[in-house]
Image (spheres, helix red, strand yellow):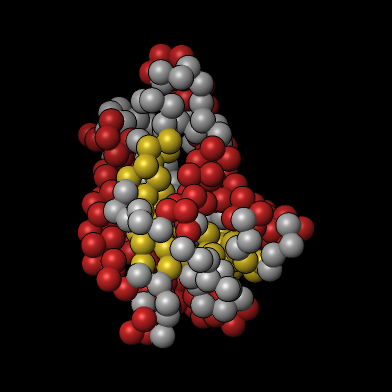
Length: 253
């Protein structure tokens, strides 16, 4: 299957970690990349500069993906700057401090659902409005970032996060079937415990490092680049007959 002549990828949460790794690897594979961030524009601009250094066009598009008006404005900005998206990576996400369910409050849950669930659905909606033939598109690909936590539950740590990621799995399966006839493929990658700054920002760095030896059959943490490689493959023509897949990148866990 031939790749489209003009490939425009939007990566949400693309300023660091897995999102930044996806942007860099996608650029090397020939994608123009719109790098979304919520607040760290400087970090997003550095990723965009790396995309441009790889010979591709890049654009920084700040937006809170849980805000419908902001998502709509972000996609319009990409339309004007790079052209309509032909691929979307729903990567924006967060964890919170470790907590048991009995100590969780509604504000924490609203933040978790907003970024992971509302954000993923709104971004997918806007992407489909550009990819589907009935809207003038010619198909495309969406990759959602789920997590191995969707399978294991993260008890005593962030059960709310694992619930959100389990919903992403369900969303991936259902949306893949809904838009398959439109030539839009929808898949998810489920990373295991990955060595990124997200854990340190929420005080989990020591626990995460200890987990590698105890729970991961490969006895090490994964890297953002290893996850990104799976994402970029799912975006590519090499995965042309793959949709509705939940691909674990979790070291055997």
